[in-house]
Each structure stands twice: as C-alpha cells, then as structure tokens.
Amino acid sequence: MKIKKFKIVPRIREVYNNLRRNNICITSEIETMVTIVDKKIAEVVLPSVLFETFEIEDKRIEKIKSKIENIPKNVSLITFILVTLGEKVENISVTEDKEIEKIVVESLLLEYLDAALRFTYKILQQQLEEKQELSSIFTLPCEVYPELFCLIDPAKIGLRYENSLLVPKFSSINYLFWFKKK
Image 1 (cartoon, helix red, strand yellow):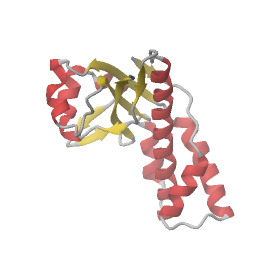
Image 2 (cartoon, one colour):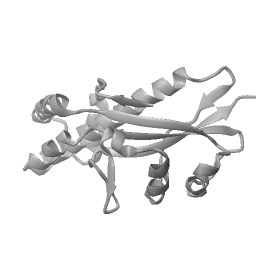
Image 3 (cartoon, one colour):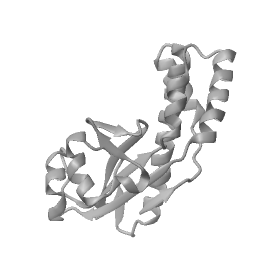
Image 4 (cartoon, helix red, strand yellow):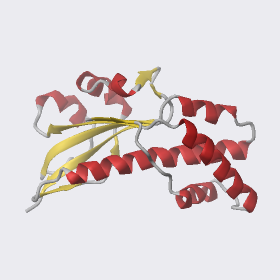
C-alpha cells in the first residue's frame, strides 16, 4: 500500500531529548530555533510510505530473511515499510551554517521520520485480526535492499538506493513481524 502527503507531527519532547543527548542545553534560544526550524520543515515535508506484507514462508523473501536475525517461530507474516520525507527537506539540512542549527534540523527530521513510521504502525494495527499481534519496528539491513527492491518498487514514493545510500537522505526501510497469538 502506498500513502503520500499525509500529515505528521513531531514529538517536540523527543527532539529536546535528542538535543540533550548531543550535549545541547535547552535554552529559550534553542526552543525558539526548534520552533522556527519546525515551521520551515512543515512547509516542505512530503512524507510518503510504501508497505507490503508477505507470508513468512514466501520463497521470494528467502534472501531477505537470511539477513534478519532471530526470526521467532510464531511469525506468520512480515511487513516491509519504506518511508521518506521527500527531497525538499534536503535543502533545509544543507542550508544551515551553524553546527547547533544542523543538529536541530537533523533531530527534527529524524523525529518526523519516526512520526511517519508511527503513522504506518497505526494503520497496520487496524488490519490485525483477532489472533494476531505486531512486533516492534526494526531497521532492515542495507545489504538486502536490492532484493527488496525487486519485490517492492521504491520509485513509487520517490526513493532510490544510490552508492550504498538511500536517496532522499531522510528515508528508512524497516520491517515488522505479525505473530500468531495462542
């Protein structure tokens, strides 16, 4: 399923926590900077998500499964989730000169990316049947991107894999398991 141009809102508290982890003291100036940068991002962010679910025994995903560690035995399905914030956000992250501003921009963009994943997770939860539950979301190892891209066309959401990097930069490829409840 492909979903484009949906509304997401970052958790500002998480942005501040990330800034603290980067040894940035939260002052009124930093709070103002976060607000200003968030408004800039909100004007240009174009989140898109593409996800597809496969039976865990599907032969087409054998190579991908071989790179995923510790697949539990009671897994029936696996969903691959491709998420991007679009190319316009790249300009925001490049145009900032000060180191602190770069960290603020990156922290906000990563939180927007996480918000898009949370949005997708909620959609998948709505598809659960009575005797199913979802795992957490995990990051897919990049060495299996080519195999995944043979099954799911990332161009549908403007995502590419060039020179061992995802383009646009603020994108991610993830997966989650569907468990059978007892």
